[in-house]
Length: 104
Image: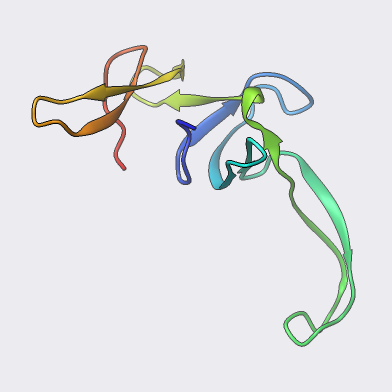
C-alpha cells in the first residue's frame, strides 16, 4: 500500500467524489483507509466510563483504497505514488505527476 497515515487523498468515485481529506488510519488487510470527513456514519453508543453521555456519535467509516487517490499540493492535482530507489539504496515514495518526494 502506497498510501499511509497522514497523507492527503481525494475521493475519486462514489458519494463523496471530489472531497479531500487526511488519512486517519490504514487497514492493509482489508485494503481500506479512514479519511477525515469522508464516509460519515452514525453510531449509537451506550453510556460508559469513557463516554458518560452516550447517544448518537457521528464518525468516519473505512473506504476502499481503490476509491481514493493521493493529492499532490505542489501540482494541485491527484497523482499516483511510485517507489523510487535513491543512490544510497533507500526507497522513497514519489508523486508520479511531478517527481516530488513525500515527507514520511
